Structures are given as C-alpha cells and as structure tokens.
Length: 413
Image (cartoon, rainbow, N blue to C red; front, top):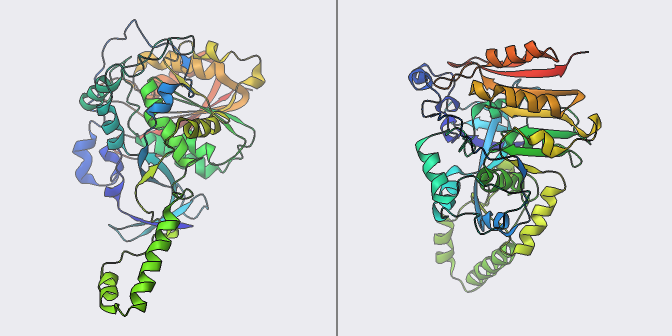
C-alpha cells in the first residue's frame, strides 16, 4: 500500500467538521454546519433535465490546460479490514491510518477558472434538444459560490465536497462489491467521489453522474473523473520529463569529469529528494491536460464509454433516460447531502423509485438534520415508508455534533 503523510488540517474540504470530528472545541462551529445556506422560493424556471454533450466545443474548452489537484484521504470504517488503498500518517498524532485515496480538483483552481469566464459562458453554443437551458455562467456562478452554499433552483452547492460523500466512499470501500457489468447512478453528484470510486473498481461498470448545474459537471465532475481514471497523476508522466532528467544527469557527469567538485557538492546541499509515488510524493500538485481539441476529445470519449453526465432538475430525469424495461435500470443509486430541503424529497424519491432495478439498492447519505433549511432523514424516511415500496435500514452511522447516516433502500419482497 502507498503511504501518505498528512494531518487533519491538510484535508481541505469545505465543512469544518471534516477537520476533526471529535474535537470538542469545534462544537460551536458545527452547531450550524451549513450556516451559509440560503434558500429562495422554488423558481418557476428550473433547469430541465438534459444530457450534457461532452463533445461540444464549449465543454471541451472548459477543460483547463492545467489541473490543480489534491488527494482526498478517506479513512476506512474498520481499520484492518483490507478495504484501504493506502496508509496515511497523521502528522498531528503520529498514528498510521488506513485510507481510501482519490484525486479531486482543487476548489481554488475551480474558482480561479470561473473568475476568468464571463457571464455568457456557453451562450455561444447553439441551443438544442440536449442542452436547452444552462445554469449560471462565469462571474455569476463565482458570486453565488462566494456568498452562499445553496441558492435553491440556481446553485445547489456542487462546487464543494461535503462530508457525507466521504462517508459514502468509506462505506462502499468496506463492502468490497464486484461492480463488473453493473449500472450505477449518482444523483446530485457535485465532485462525484462516490461514483468515481465505483468507476475505479471496474473497467466494465457504467456510472452515470447527475448534478443540477452544468458548470459543476464541466469544471468539477468531469476533471475529477479524468484525474481518477484516464489521466491519473500517478500514472501520467509528461512526455519531455525523462529527456530533461537525462540532460541534467549529463551535465552533472561533465562537471565531475572537469573536476568541478565544489560546485557539485554545493548543488547537493539544495538538491530535492527524488519524488517517490510509493510515499505519496508527486512532481507537483498540478497536471497538464492535452492542449489540442483532438487530445481532449480522445479523453472525453474514454469517459463517455463508461459514463453519461446529466444536468438539470430531477423532475423529467426518468423520462429523459427512457428505460425500456427493468433491466435497463440501475443496480445501484448513490446520493449524498441531497435531502437538505424537504420540498425536494418527493422528486428525489420518485427518481430513485423509477430508476432502480428490482434487486438493486439505493444508498442515501445525509445528516440527520439540516439547520436552516429543514430537511432531515426522518422526514425522508417517512415519505418512503408511507409509499410502502421499499424496505429501509440505516447501514452506517457517524457520531458527531450533527449525526450522519447512510440509509439503504431495497424493494420489498
């Protein structure tokens, strides 16, 4: 297994609860974990469900030339279970911890790119049946992300990675399921770490990803998929890197031959140790993508072989998918932090109910209650039980100031 050195403070996620769930001195911060949420009345102009065409120029050009990324270290639920992909050393406590590691695009990198876009991002693309309405673009999206984690019906918090998504990854890792040939859907995916984790476990699994905002899909979801699958930092090496190393080595050898040993010793004092992926070291925390449209199209085509990206509201999503029969539906549906608003429960539940294959299951990861917005697991569970179609059970629970759970839905026999 790989080894990474990190501390809780290095986990740059967006809820302070992630930094240290057990510290009593953070309870004041966590008493309103989503205190920046603001909810406006449900607008009448909701973005309709549509399939995002990854091959359009607008989508291709949204991929930056350089991706700045970070490693998400997700502790496994049961240490010693063999579910981990790496060993992390917490530099604060000095203790080793088994973790699942995934790459994610740095949030500041996303915001920097958004700041460079104008409000007409995507407006130059012809309107068509698969992309009739886009969400806010450029500066508008940056303003929304800066002032609030949620503007109902406009921006649904997808730029950030929320802690229940990490719970879901840890739970999936613990289950060690075989995903070969299966179909998986992640609703409200955002950074899409749960769905991406499933993608990394099989070459034949199909994982579809859905988020309300097309900008989130283009700037966060798609880059994260690439970082963990077809353009991994630990596997991709720049084409000219080896040539540069050879030139440096040749120069050093010549210096020694010329008797220039003093300069060589001085260089050694400042020489950085060679990056070793086995220790979690990489040349940098940035990665260049192909700079040509052809190169990007080739990468996107690989993504399309296993995944579709859907944007827009949940209403209409099932009709868009146009299932011919039960076998066309999903074996597994994942969703996290999507029940924060009770008025959306019915749409989310209907989407799960009508998209899940008989014999399949859905996993809903959420806090037991969302301060300021009213959603909670109990209300969502009552809705399900009233319908009488699914059995429900809590398969994961995390004790924190705001309790977190994963609810499993399976069809009644």
